[in-house]
Length: 157
Image (cartoon, rainbow, N blue to C red; front, side):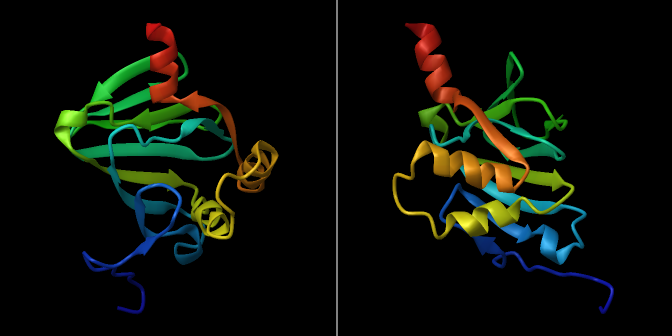
């Protein structure tokens, strides 16, 4: 097993930020990819953001995930796959309170985005907007808008 990495079902690294269990991060894969499993709770998705160099890929295991890429908003369900290339603003969320958490596999290529989650562990509650932007920037990303739930709330009114 010297050339193989095995992470058992209950193993991985969870962080305070988000709802992902990193099965492996870039530091364990030579920077090739991050692989995480997420349980996306109702209205818990991230802000609209852009990755400079990473493809952000989603595979839904259960539930319906609402995904925004650019101006397009669509729902993806069990067995559906979507990938967002670098430079495209995107976000995702669970907008159906009745369904419970949406279970999703998320792969980032190249890897290393787990370092943002590690850094976030030392951030105090309610960081300044400038701090958030600086953390994202150090990890090749930038927030560019509100979470999907806020965008949809504003467009409905």
